Length: 138
Image 1 (cartoon, rainbow, N blue to C red):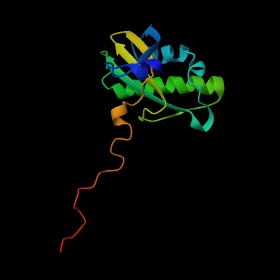
Image 2 (cartoon, rainbow, N blue to C red):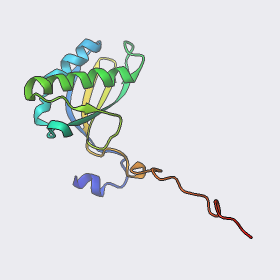
Image 3 (cartoon, one colour):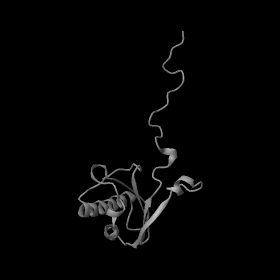
Image 4 (cartoon, one colour):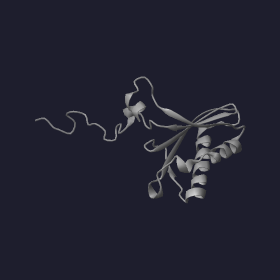
């Protein structure tokens, strides 16, 4: 937390959780299942939430969203087996965010300690109105 508060040059803080080899989606799923997510993701019950992002450069995968889905499935399957909870997932980065970096056969799994960038939190949730619009002049 202190690093997120005082960092001036970095865009996000990623904490390395695990590194393993995977040649295909089945290897990715197996590697994710080995990580003890029940000790890392502390929310439980109706408030459990997870977001998975990725950077992928491997010939077996054409779309990074497939990696996000595969990794999320492995995480929630392990949590369902160990804790009896199944977190919701969404692209919103406002709670637990896991980032996958997969290049060639090397996979690195990070916990994103920064979440959504400060510049985007609440960005344009209430659109501005143009000055003078909606008023009439006599």
